[in-house]
Image (cartoon, rainbow, N blue to C red; front, side, top):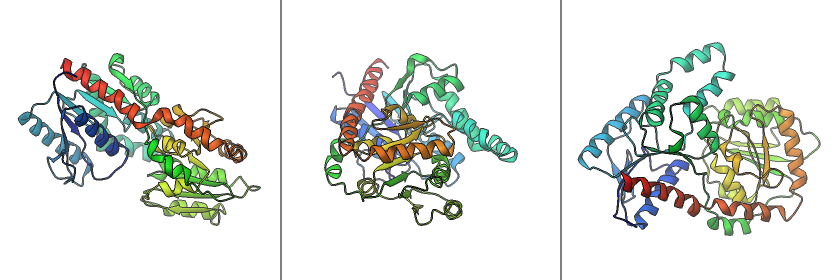
Amino acid sequence: MGRPLRIALLKSSVQVKGGLEKYCQRIANALVQQGHQVTILSTSASQEPLSVKVCRKLPCTPLHLLWFDYHCRRWLSRHPQDVVFGFDRHFLPLTHYRAGNGCHAAYIARRMAEASFFKRWGLYLNPLHRLLRYSEHLTFEQKADSVLICNSNLVREEILHYYPKTDLQKLFVVHNGVEWFEFEKPFAERHPPHIPTLLFIGHEWERKGLDRLLNALALIKEQPFHLTAIGRERHPGRFFSLAQTLGLNDRVTLIPRAQPSLSFYQTCHIVIIPSRYDPFANTTVEAMAMGLYVITTKANGGSEVITPGVSGTVLEENFAPQALADAMREAFLRIRDPSLPFRIREGAQQFDFSRKLSKIISLIELSGKIN
């Protein structure tokens, strides 16, 4: 290794341990182990020794983006860095950016396609969406020598489609990883019930497609099953009403708040991610590391790591309810094979976090030394 690099990781929130926060902290720890000087710039008073609180968090999202960006600029002007690595949407010059949130332009296009006339106008006029598009333009098209890391080929192709001036040579795909070895004991202690048990995990239930799942489940009359859905949802009443209307009250459990997922993985057979848009659902690789069959859509970048018919089923983006119902019926048959969980888990080992981190670290070190 050459000289140690001064590296700033920009992550507004480090207290909520979601997918982006997890990646930021793991990258920071791995860089420190390589001998680099790492600082995480955030708005959180964190226990992490590497974290520096540059400002407080504002409740208005558009203002907060600009506020956090301004204070990061100020800190960086006083503390020059070799590498400036962004995880959120930014307006300042970055050497590296991980597009873990996907391509906002593609997300809005998908929402526009399904929205009513008035909803489309609302999406078009919303200042937050305009600000995020401008941020993407600066990050993808303006900074020619930056390194852009996508967590799926889906995101890479969307960036090239909506931001055609992006330099193809600076785009790299590194799929999300999973703590494969840490899942070994929980996998060995799985205790699913006798009837097929389904699990839906995700925040923002409409974007994750819970309504689509409930409509498909209503078509399965001949097979006993139980679905548990967990994740933060601001308007859960709509989904409770839909389940009741479809006659699914006794067959589904809806929990509209974040929950530790491990115990739910241990008590289910199939994970279903019928996303309308998901750059890469972490649930995909977590489920596979637990030996669970996954049903998802091509709108989830995580579908790229699934081996169809072995570790899961991948549906078209705009699937019909009957297609999902048929996929679940097929999965009910596949999970009868007692060797299936072991084969799925074995296939997921290639997505262990250590392998993914090594790719990101190499991209940071190589370009950091050049800069």
